Length: 109
Image (cartoon, rainbow, N blue to C red; front, top):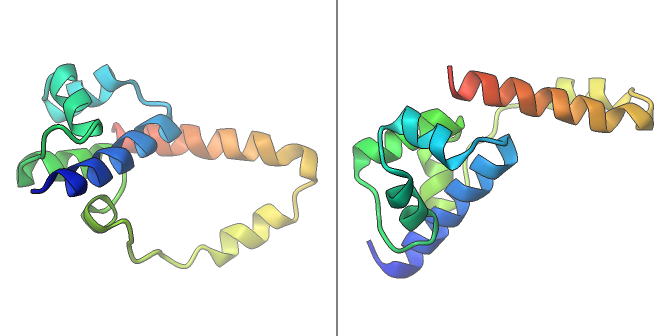
């Protein structure tokens, strides 16, 4: 892979990991790679094998389409959005925290 692509991939991996609140070490344990290697991937210094890409996607709950190309087919979540839109504005941050915790839990199952 070229360096520009590696940087894009690394940025997407890091952004998702941080969004979910997963530590680098926690993801490394799941994927079975070293924290140093993950750091190099996230900085775009190194690329990943197909097997590592698969495990990263599984651990982060994202698709390879998103990691590789920055886009993915999104499921219809309009019912969830509609439900969330009925919440009082003061509860939105709590709902976001709950969803992040849920995604983190299922990503590292």
